[in-house]
Image (cartoon, rainbow, N blue to C red; front, side, top):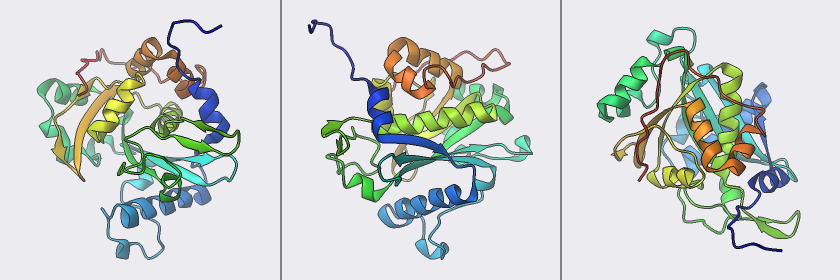
Length: 267
């Protein structure tokens, strides 16, 4: 019997019936990541010059100190989406992050202090989130530029009904798995405002969110301590928490410092 209480769809069952997360731990899978990025960032959204990548694999100087992951379609094995975590590497105090010089100085004082106080070797930037052109053609919301800023209603030929695996949540599964593997406790990112709003709907809220700025389009910088974000997600959306953490299998370490999140409204 159906009650009057609103319930959320089982996002874990839906996502796992259609997709899987694959960490890129081999040269073959890393090349798949680069190929997808070339299609997205050089062809679909030409932020980068395709002539700079004669092998049709988009990569840059941050990739050697990054962890990479793919979202793959279970039935076909196709690469659906990719993301990387840029880490500080072997020389944390000398290593920059891609968004750092462009965005961090424009965040408020409390955000800058939080970034400065966090151990640099424990920070990672969420970067190069990309969704394939072929997959976007299967979505009903094809107007989204990035493919992850609007609900991704997937026409699921495997069980004959429309599923709703939000691709950004699948990417967050990958982000968390990579973070646990590499001991990351803090995340920074620069995202579309609509993507931040979508994530907030699913209980994913960053502690610090900066102003809208021009950075490959309109973007907002964000910074958070991973464990507090995941715990907040558990309180707000336990169903999403279960998907992202794989039922509690992946939980980020708490930072050694006395960091406390200073939650900002995500507009």
